[in-house]
Image 1 (cartoon, rainbow, N blue to C red):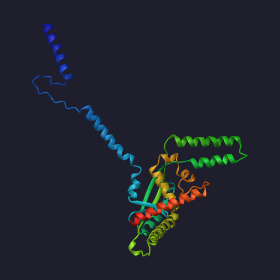
Image 2 (tube, one colour):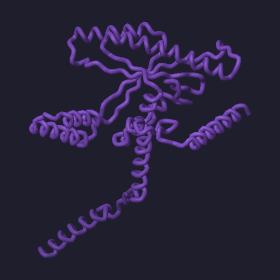
Image 3 (cartoon, rainbow, N blue to C red):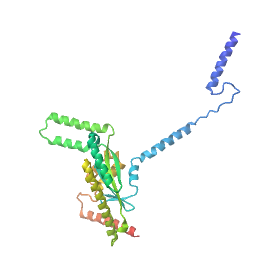
Length: 301
């Protein structure tokens, strides 16, 4: 009798364990619960779609802010950004002040000057911040040139300077380090109804002159007011605006292929300054004249 009871208990335990493993009800007359599982392929596609959705905006994250800031750019000329609706934008770089290193009285003085400038202007001013990788190429090059130029430099001093240069290289390459550039953007839309001209060229020239004079006046006002708060404002030339765009759309590549090197190699010039034959120069000029005539013909048609 004891053996039969033992076998029944062992059989019951095995039965319960088997039903639990199969995820079925222990009592056979109970309804079997539907086990809803997500197929592996569906789960994989969901993860993939989420990942692709999260990665798609990252590819345009660096360029999108500038495109939103200047949505309808037509050309870069005369130290201005020209838009398609006769709106012009002028950019100025601002050198910041060490605000948090000053005492409370100096901070309040800076705040008062900045608020006074904002209260005096009657036109909108936009602020553009750009993060760049720290580039120590020029300071390192200057240190190296100074050490090489000194004939009476002590060997230990030269060794110390060389170690410092090597440490700066390693510090720059160890991990990404950023610096923030600050810009003020001034916009002005020219009212073409107030401009009178006898020819298209004169009309175009007057539009550009009016926009430049007004925007330059605004930059000069900001420069004179913010100078009192030790914030220097520098007008960006056409090349300076091109540099901002270069670092905006090529932030990682600009570490090795610097914009300054591009300019020094004269890759921004219309004509190269190397020795060229007279025939070659004449051929290039003829080609430029031909392209300009074609563009004028297309505009006239």
